[in-house]
Image 1 (cartoon, rainbow, N blue to C red):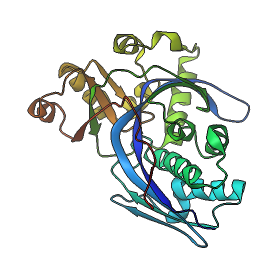
Image 2: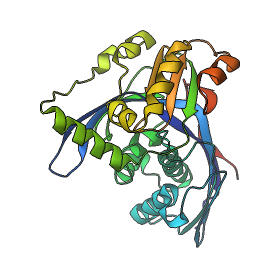
Image 3: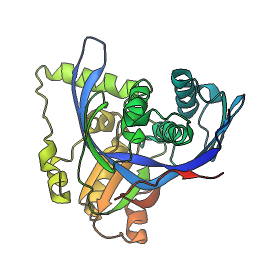
Length: 293
């Protein structure tokens, strides 16, 4: 049984705050983070078919198709529900790959939402989140339609926060990628050298306004990544000098973002950061799924 087709925008994310806590017995670190969606996103379309599985990803080199997280998400949905027998995924990439903006995870979350919108027997939000947990720590959040979320554990435990007012965001891409596994290794090495370390926990109740967020806006990856890539620290400093109320590394990097109350002057930003950059904004509402036949 085929089930038509649908499309949605897979919005990028930034981490307005990110604490990396202790590593558990399973080898994974617990985290606390504040996720926020951006207007920047990939266009994702899914068609349910009687047979066959394919993915067409245009606009960026996203690696081998069999490793694509969106394809894995569709396969996981089909395995869990017995539907669809086949599918075709089309992605127009706009989110930079490997930059800490959750592009692959956003595509996977969009595919899960699209399939559930088309399915004859939808699994609903809880079912989608159960599938998302097996795909990566950013995928559960990016499967929801919440603009801002406080997440903890491995990212699967979430509390939706009130949407923050729209703000301009400058994304800066220094021209290199940071491997997430390597970033965790650097963080662990640095903490071992310090000898003692106490985690600083976030408080979700203090995140209802941008002024609150600015007080808590820190990323534990900034110091270890910045020590190996000094240009990260320089970009953060220059975005703050250009008027950014918040300037941080997103995720484990390498993308750095600045939050501005008003759209900044393009010339000022170009002079401040000698790297590729892009202007976008935060979202108050995530784009809904749209059926296309």
